[in-house]
Amino acid sequence: MFKRDMEPETETDTKRSSGLPESLNQLANIAKQYGISVENIENDAKNIYRTLSKQIHPDLYPEPNVKIKKEEEMKELNAIWDKVPNQYKTANTWYDNYVYSEVVKTIIINSIKKDIK
Image (cartoon, rainbow, N blue to C red):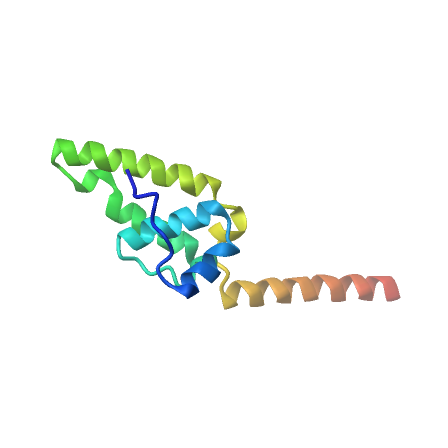
């Protein structure tokens, strides 16, 4: 259903797509078709997927022919999303990094204190 032959449009797109998993490149191509920015797809894949899901969801289209087409597109989108590695599915925000690093620091410090006693 989606156009599979989309080529990267700029040199920046080529550089970005070369180091990403194929499933993430496919997600980016679909997002571009719907006019969704993919500038930070490495850290924002989940939001891009959710935005696409909201635009493609078949329940938004009451006309039977369009609904069937959107159901197929949604199935294809979900199949691509299932192939996206987990590291891209979770948001990598400053808050998450900060909280995680503080928890790790606390665990390490506490284990060192126990070893010293």
